[in-house]
Image (cartoon, rainbow over all chains, first blue to last red; front, side, top):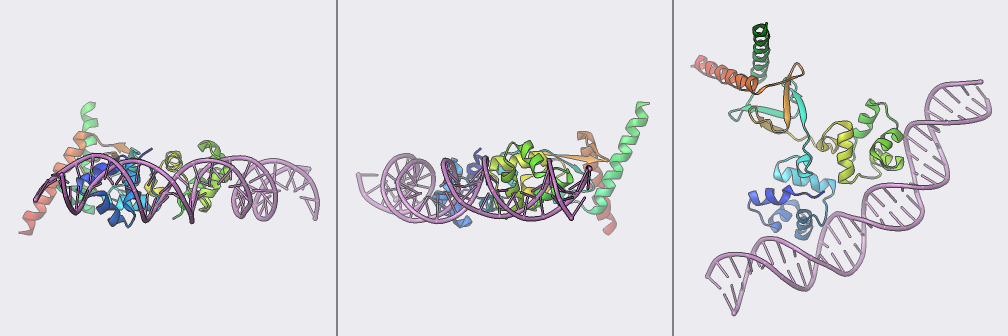
Length: 110
Length: 110
DNA sequence: GTTTAAAGTACGCAATTAGCGAATTACATA
DNA sequence: TATGTAATTCGCTAATTGCGTACTTTAAAC
């Protein structure tokens, strides 16, 4: 298992290996090792990488973990519409809307 | 950084260290090391742990990673209402509902 | 209270591996 | 071609993993 996404993420930012290593506070050869698959980061380094590139550890590890999330309990996730965060009121409104929609679907099916 | 959640997750399932190690195909002392913080899993083992306990690697690593997610682009996340997965139609309906709500709020503010 | 089996903890050893620096190679651009 | 930056590779050392084994604790049965 290699960290295949690293190279892509770094290039999207137009950073050299040295740039990236400097931001992480590690040696260039160390970071280069992560990208090439020659070495692996410690957990601390993995988390620094995820923070730096704004993604999840699961993503870096290539784990496509599918999650179910109840609309009323989003935990750490902030939902947006048109890039604007949803308020509590908007969420409960949307939930009510969906329930009504379903109700109508069911009645129509009879 | 220790994997503090492991013990909790295991106990929720009422498994012994041996049970858990068997499910993972590793030695009891190895798994016990993960819980105690004496040893750390490899990435492969970390992913097995996340799979076994049905959670994310970020969660196991204690990384509370806050994510913004556009309602129309949920990626790996399946949204539910009343435990039932949202359809495309329900999502676009909810988005339309939210836009209208916002529109009305704005007009009211004038 | 004693016995016994399972659960949990701790550690030595062998083998592997991370991280670094240094050296080498590739790639621009003047 | 010359020159500076980027990328790759590798030897060395220190640190770490995973396992087996042994030890301690817990709890249930008698």
